[in-house]
Image (tube, rainbow, N blue to C red):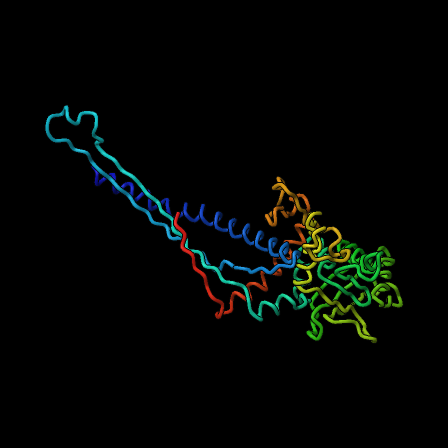
Length: 353
C-alpha cells in the first residue's frame, strides 16, 4: 500500500511541478526584473540631478533549479495495544518542492556603452519607432532636435518664449497628413537615400496643409498643385542647396538629461544647493514631470526613496510614462551592447527560498 501511494505521489507530483513552476515562476521573475530595472534607472536619474555618481547592474541570467522530493511512511505498533492505541498513523506521505534560483549580474561600463549612450539616435531607429506607434508625431518631437531650419532644443536657453513655433506646427501638420492617409514614410527603392516622404492624392482637400508643410521645410509646391510629391529624408544638417528633409536627433543621454531636469526638487534641497540647475524645458520636456514627496506615494507607476524623499512618476501621467518608457528602451540598447562585452566582470548570486 505504501509503495502504491508513493508511486502515485511521484507520478502526480512530477506531472504538475514542471508546468506550474514555469507558469508561476516566469511571471514572477519577469515582473521583478522589470520593476527593479525601472527603479534602478529612476534612481540613477535622481542621483545625477544631485550631482552624484551611480553604477548600473544588468541581470544577464536567471537559472531556477526546482527540486522535488516525496516521502511516505507506515506506523506499526508492537506489544500491548494500550501502549500505542490512537497514536499511530497507518500511512503518511508528503511532497516537498524547493526552488534555488541563481541570478547573474554584469556591471555596465566601457567605451561601447558610452559610445552608444552619447551617439545620436539613428534615423532607422526613429522611423521604426514612428511606424510602430499610433501617434508618430509625438515621437518625432521627443527624438528629433532639428528638421531643416526648424529647431527643437532640449532646453529654452536662448528665448524666454520657449520653443520654435515652426517646429511644433510642422509636427502638427505631419500628424494631420499622416492620419489622413496623404503622407507616408517609405524606404527609397534606389538605396541612395534610406527614406522618402511620399505625399499623394492631396488635392484639393489637403492642398493648403501640404503647401504649408512644404513651406515650413523650405520646399516648393508642384507647379500644377496636384502632382505626387517625393521628399528625400536625410540624417544630416541642412546644406545651402538642400532639397528634402534633413533630420538630426537627440542621443539617449540627451533624453536622460531632459528627465533629470523634470524632477521636482524638494525646497529644502534646492535652498541648500544640493542639486544641479537646469534652464526651462523645450518642447520635448515641457509636459514631463518626476514628482517628489516626503511620504511614500499611493499612486506611483515607479517610485524610489532618496535623501529622505520619494521620487516618483504618477501612474496617471501618461506623457511622462511614455517618455520614460522610450528612454528606458533606448537606454537598454546601450546597456545590452555593454553587457555583451566579454571583458566585463560577472557577479553570480545563488538564492535559496
